[in-house]
Image 1 (cartoon, one colour):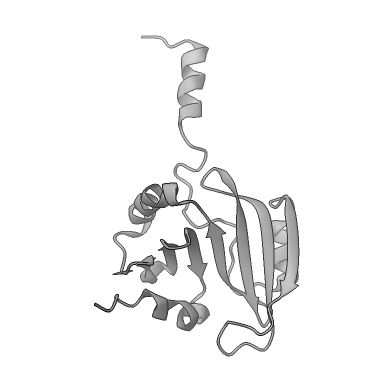
Image 2 (spheres, one colour):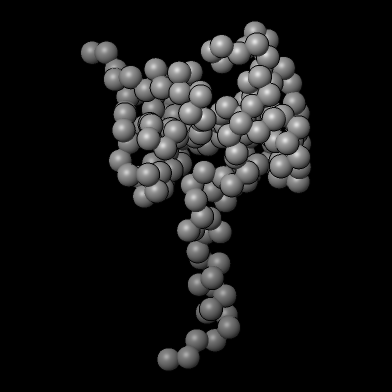
Length: 160
């Protein structure tokens, strides 16, 4: 059976652009300084604002900055993303999502990382891969190894 060009195009457009791509965006490189992260995000944000976070919420951090990126494309949609930098090193990234996406995001994370290492009412956490799906605020979190102390306590089991 020979398919016409219209059928081939409709099949092509039915496949999401992110299919087969790693779940964590390729722009994330742990430990890069603020200026390098800003350069990497140039053209990937409709609007980018870098601001100090004072006082810092990261443990053992003297100076914390955050790059707020509007229009950052993740899983095929433009979103608000926060690139958190402590002492001039990228430490974590929060990407805002929606409640209606939780199931699909969890499925994508399980497909890439396996089942969550830890779960509670607020998080499905993939600790071995330093990623989590936040269920109360509907965000995806990626974090560096040196930020585990700031994030992993939040993944503890719920107290009954």
